[in-house]
Length: 337
Picture 1 (tube, rainbow, N blue to C red):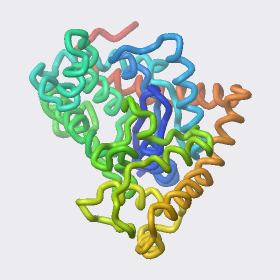
Picture 2: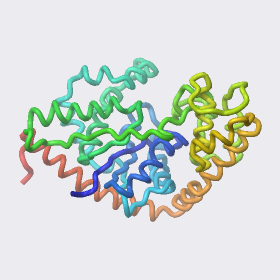
Picture 3: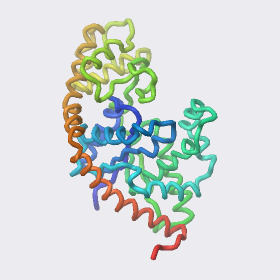
Picture 4: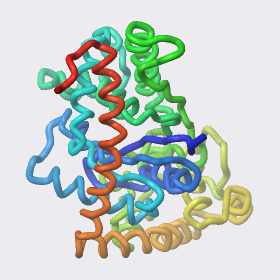
C-alpha cells in the first residue's frame, strides 16, 4: 500500500499572503512527509476573470518560488504549472459534457463573482468548478486539503466522479475515477482580514492594508499591523464572538511566534493593544524572514526553479495521462494507433 495522495494548488493572482501560507501551504509542507503530494500553480483558473497577460507568467513563477521558499521539498513532492499539463484542459472538456448545467449555476462562489462582473461574466467563470474537478480527479487523489469555502467545489468533483462518470461508464468493481475525500485543516485554516475580523484575508480585497503578503518588507508589516482594526477593550482572548479582530490577531501571534494558543492567551490576557501590536509585528517579521531570503535566492538564479518545475511536470504528466486514458476509454473514444 503506497502513501495516500494529496492534490492542492493556488492561483497566481496577486501576492500570496499569510492566509495562503498558514491556511494552505504550511499544511502541505507537513503533508509531504507522510503523503504523495502534488501541488500546482493553477494558472488556467487565473484567466477566468480579467487578467494582465504581461504579468501572468511572472506571477506564476513567483508563486512556484514561494511554494519552495515556504518549505515544499521537490524531493518529497511534485510542484508543477497547471497549464503545462494538457490533460487538465482535455479532462475538463470531457467532464463538461456530462455535468448538468444547473449543478454549476448553484455554486455559491460563481453567484458572488458574477454579481461583481455583471455582463462581462465568462463561461470560464461558470465552468471553473469543472476544471477544478478535473485538477483533482486527474491525480487519483485520496485527499484534498480544503477550507470551508472550497468544500462545495470538492463535493461537485465527488458528484461528477460518482454520479456522472463511475455510475454511467464504470462499475462498482472497476470505477473509472477515484473519489477523493476532504481534508479539513483547522488551526490557522481561516486567517481573517486585518480590516474586518469577520471576513477572510483575501488577495482580491481592494484594501491592501487588509492583508500581509509573504513578501512585505518589515516596515510595511509593522505599519499594517499598527493600523489593523481592534476594539477598545484591554486584554486579548480567544473565542469571544463579539471580538473577532482580537481572536484573529491573537491566533496569528500564537502561530507565528510558535508559542501556541494556550501560552499566547496567558501572555496577552491583560495586555493592551499598544503593547501587543509590536509583539505581533516582531513575530510576523521573524517568521517571514527565512521565506523571503529563500525566495529572493530562487528568483535571482532561476535554474533551480525551472528544474523543479520540469521534474514536477514530468511526474504530473505520467499520472494525469494515465487517468485521462482511462476516461477516454470508458467514454468510447478511438485509441490512437
